[in-house]
Length: 396
Image (spheres, rainbow, N blue to C red):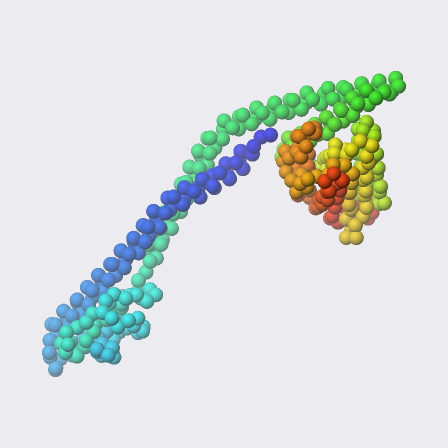
């Protein structure tokens, strides 16, 4: 079956993009960290420059008791003079101080530079403190633009390269798909010829066990063929729902498998206490019923029996129960895994129940498997209320 190339490219492009992005964005993290550190250093230098300007202004004013000193003002910087007890002599700073230790300090986005002054020299002040607000907006904006550019570039390159790489696989898959479809067609033709001729022979001559075995074998092959055909077509065509007489449909499939049962003296019985219609796709329903019955027959003992029950549930749904009394299943939880086979000597590819699982997972159907090894298994399919069609809806 062909791999969905578009889905393949999308999935692995995203995986490739994530891996490469992590590798390339790691240096960006250190770049941003370096830029933040540089911003801190630059802010500290600017604060020192502001304080140097203020000290120069105070030195120029000198000890002039009759003059009025105009404290320098700056747009983005606030300064103040404080005593040795940090009481305010003059201050433009409105925020509380984070520390009274000389040096560079931070509090949120605020940055402070505290400088000790010579005693009794500048208006009896012991400390000059300057404050400003730091901003990382430009740094983060630049980093965001770089990161976005990296992600877009990687994603585009991923799509381009993966599309290029997938071309050979696409061609191989197309050839393989074409081969499988041709093979399926070639299988169907002789199967049909065998069935028709066996039926004609039976209508002219008396039936015998050899013809019955041939007929049984062709029906088993037909089930495998139908599974393969469904696998090929499931992603290519739309299976539309139809109104189905549930009991009649199951009865027809039970009759189809009766000949296979007769060869092993297996009794296949249908017990139905209801006549219900459901809205579902016949092809999908056939895959559910046929695979379940086929497995029940395959793992039943000779001279055994298989019971099929149809009954309504209290919640308005309908249940299909297939119970056999054969070998049972060691690992019921694995039975729907693709290509899983508990008994290698049994025929089949291990795809039937996986097909069933893919159908019920997309439908309002639940499956319960109860099995006791060497005693038998019970498969219960519950078609929930949304699939059941009442008599009023049938008229429409």
